[in-house]
Image 1 (cartoon, rainbow, N blue to C red):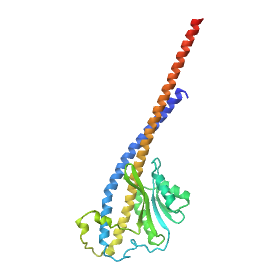
Image 2: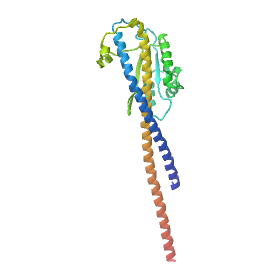
Image 3: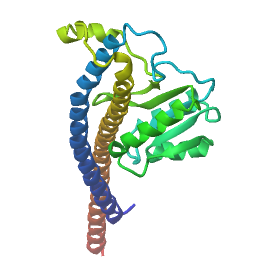
Length: 286
């Protein structure tokens, strides 16, 4: 390898380093925005779920088809949220590995958000009934919810399950499967805060039974929105970390190539000096 080739490689790797550094900075900004959105929307969903739990505590079982399923089907409908772009580390890999290991593609159907999941499920022979990969996810929330709700209420599916990567912190996310329908309200949420409004008795008009369906639909739609925001934050954090690792690796490659360039240049200088000394000795001997 000559010195000109090494210089070209150093220049190429330096250009790649600039790109990965820029992508790291962009992903960091996007992650902070998505993280802020996730933090701002979480209290509303939790409060709404606590209020629904308290309001429905005295109602008899089966008061809403959104709470208890009557379907005899064994099929589930999965709402899968992935990314449409790559270069985000293990973000898509973990999600798709969970899909491949835990879910039967022949016995379940899918609604897809993200091109990576769409491509994978098509290759595995899964049935995709709706693909929202080509639209902005947050703009398609109502359409996604309406599609899933209609299929569930028609009795085609026993459950509607939301599968996505839940954002935990900058360095960690977790593949999570959440049952959307039938809706499951957690009693733990009621005891998490000592809010006097939540603990008091509600006076609901016309009645809890008449309004509960509308409130539950709002809660489920908000859960889909929260999952999309969480997935977006996890994607950007994973891409930021991946690009930081790529930038660090590029620096190491540049360092090693620089050492190699200096070594080749030093060898060239040494050989030229030896040639000069040899020529001098040859002249002096003659």
